[in-house]
Length: 329
Image (cartoon, rainbow, N blue to C red; front, side, top):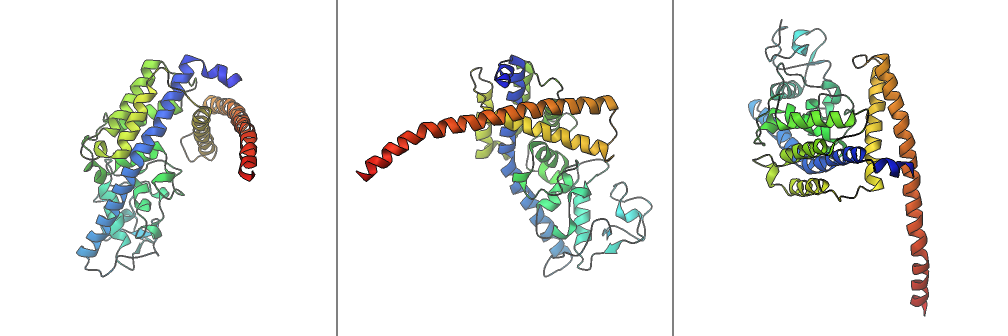
């Protein structure tokens, strides 16, 4: 098979290994992110209930585009919380939450954002879920498009979860690492982009192992992550990846290539719809060529997976048949 000959290339194999490491990293941090997102949601609602003396914190009527935040005071010239293009600076048409809740949640999201200036990604959220679903608050901290329909940590990829941890100050209280431009979470985000956006899909072994070591450092962050069983299991899997005799399955290879192909499709769509900074024609052409090559390999991998499944089924049928005969005798 052509893809088998490709996989035998040392540098391609190292690239697949690093990409598989991101899958293990996601498995290790997803439960942590889910737990902390739920804690933050509870703390925000409890604080609003207490400070506003409300019997219940509930609303499903507001929209973030027309919501008047609590910190808006007669049409601010500049947002007192530092957010650019804040709803407080353009009060015309903005509506105060009838239940005195959503404006306060808006403020809590802005003040929890780790950017300077704070920059929640409002397009990832739906305000009418704020009181009932922690992830519609958490997704405001993922500063990238494409997460608006994601419902939980299980639906969100590795880079989305890393953005959530890096950009949300509430999460900073649950990790040992101090978030800076060079912290390990930011480093793994950069590593991940280099892996996924590689035009050659090749890495030196030292590069791949360095990326994997960064992923391990994330999972071994102090305070809470390093003590969680999910993180410990993921670290063990990542350490095994560095063994020279580690076997990369056809399913693992196909899964990684599908993820990369999906990201390229999303990038091309955003470029074509002008929802992202325009890329050069040469860059778009390169991405289309890479996508075509990926789809060809994915199709071949799919055929091999189906063939392997058919072989297993064929080998089991005679045994099953003999067992059924024995059962009847």
